[in-house]
Image 1 (cartoon, rainbow, N blue to C red):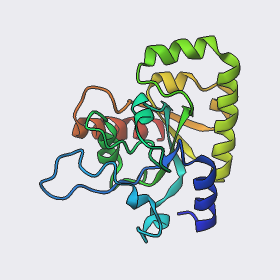
Image 2: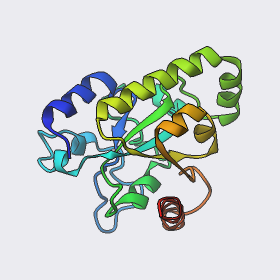
Image 3: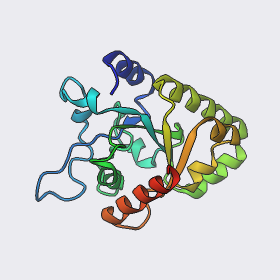
Length: 201
């Protein structure tokens, strides 16, 4: 858990591109993607259990925000809570609910690069080494603000390979499958929990 002052500091500084692994749960009979975009659960004034559920000792790290985010009104903690029917964020919810990773802090390596096509991101990364270094500096500062020496679970190879050797030496980093991979939510949960278990024995 975290205290309200820490939560508010993160909210003020990072919430336009970060979030928490807490989602509203679908009701019985609702589709798998229902309520993923409900941000009321990330408001401690509306969700009295929120601060106790948050787990800054784990970080879920993506590559960059989807370009769909450009179409939406900016809102705190919106990242990884995309209400679009095209989004795959629901798989993260299903994968980590009722596990020690529920409530993890969530952010991206590149926070101002809204792009869905990973090939474009890969090209940008190769052509802008100074910008990449600046993003990694920001990421380290963001992680320091958690004050927790977190286990970092990285979605996919491209995000994982964007981290420098120094970053890997300074942090506990585990690569897991990206949630956009073609598999159902049950298989995704089984796969990523197995990857984490194998890497943290």
